[in-house]
Image (cartoon, rainbow, N blue to C red):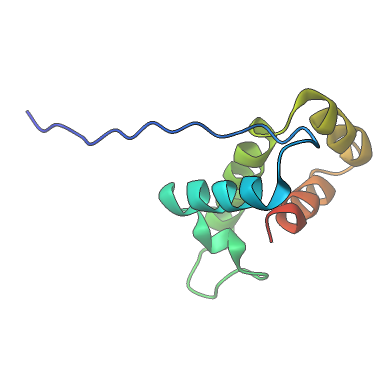
Length: 96
């Protein structure tokens, strides 16, 4: 039986009171740990399949949204309900 190394860490929720730079750094670390650091690039790397890129971006948005406090998340969703792409761009801007 092969044992996997499982690392647990706590992601602080960004609630507007949390230090943004610390939160942003933590989110970037999580993205790297999850193998999603490609999304930190401004454009899709040429080596990544377009379908795979869409999945990677959705995972990134999900991680960021899970780390938002309720009121901040509500405001993000309210601003971006018309387009998933808009939410995705907002989340990318938050992290970069």
